[in-house]
Length: 125
Image (cartoon, rainbow, N blue to C red):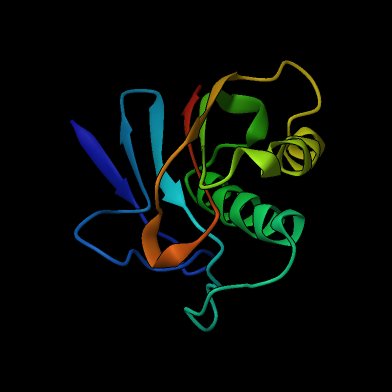
């Protein structure tokens, strides 16, 4: 059986999906982009600013479902420019300080709303 999780603390989905779905003890968090939960508008700034917003949205979803970054076992980072990897990686390291999850970083041709970074995670308790 699956359980759906959505929180007002993160941006509402912009398509036919949910912020997160729990199956058993595993939580699958949909890819997040730098959208403001309050306004639904893109947060623009440096790639570091945008990455902080993405990870803040993920944090809100994790907490809404009773999880935290320590529970994340897998992360996927999507970038439109691998030249941004160093800055994104530095911000990512502020959120995953110990026992970091498995991860990949993929360069893509484009992302929703023309953003530069999207991150999805899988958490387990």
